[in-house]
Length: 139
Image (cartoon, rainbow, N blue to C red; front, side, top):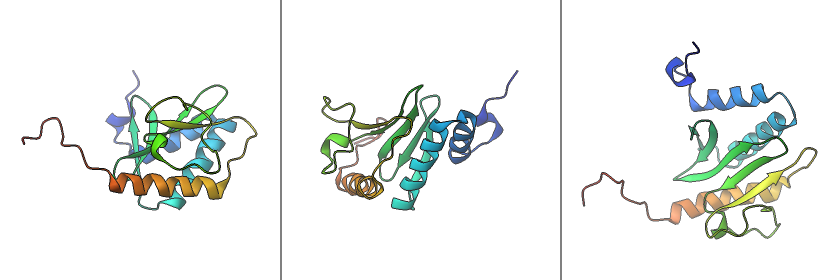
């Protein structure tokens, strides 16, 4: 029987590193590169592991998730529809009212300056949002 990672005491950052390594192909390289850009843009970002295996980067709320599929690495911004995107990085999930995503295919590069600006905008937006009371909070 395999012991789940959380039972072994792995941090979210360790689990994300493990995911990148286990992919072992362009998707792992791409996810690792985007992770480094997120961390460089916002050094205080918090890494989380949610929904049975999704890397999540947060700062005052979720900034984005990093999902890997067979043909794409998808970075979904939780409040992407509210973010300015003058460089047109968002190329997926464009019809929704809240989220927006960047799909990165093998061999594609992302504009580093535009992506860094998008992370800064997401952090700023989270800082302006009213925190929602928890479901168990007594008002």
